[in-house]
Amino acid sequence: MENETPFLPYNSERPDLIIPEYGRNIQQMVDFAVTVEDREERNKVVGAIISVMGQLFPYLRDIEDFKHKLWDHIQIMSGFQLDVDSPYPLPEPETIQSKPDSVDYPEYDIKYGHYGKILERLIDKASAMEDGEEKDAFTKSIADLMKRHYVAYNRRTVEDDLIRKQLVELSDGKLKVPDDYELVSANDVVKLMGTVKNTASNKGKKGPMKKKKKR
Image 1 (tube, rainbow, N blue to C red):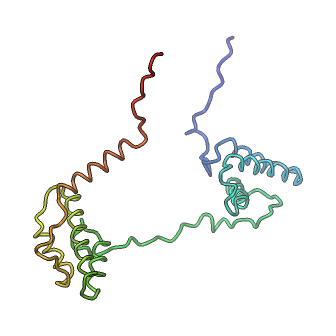
Image 2: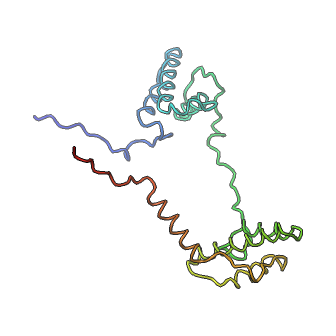
Image 3: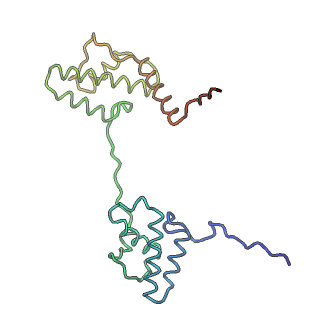
């Protein structure tokens, strides 16, 4: 009778890994450690496993409480069934398994979504400033920023009068760009967007190799 190839089970047929980052071999080591009856021998086995776990992530050794985390992880992987002399307090199962409190997503009443909340805050800050050259310069910068946001969002040109009107509206009439001030060109904004996109796509690409001259 010919030797049959031993059946290799799929990972989907195996028990789920409690902490997948350590892999199945480490999980099997932890499962074995739980079965070791002699406490002294069990301590040695767990110490060896902790050493291997640390070697898997050598770049994390400088992190504070790294060893403490390893001991917590091995307890979690054992289902809190590992009775050993740990140098750290044992983690509480209730604390580990409890879900974190939900964080409410911040909701803002933004009049024009393409401008965003940060730009509206800049408008509020400029509106509270005293009249003068600094406020005028800040207002012009905000108007240019509004146009950039508008063009980036709509991908088309926009009349400067619309930006001026919306700035007055968002500032409750406290900010106004002089009629003779020319806002940033929409074409320049589009060109800049294309340049940034091309730079990002070409990042990391090697230039053409130069041919060596024959001697």
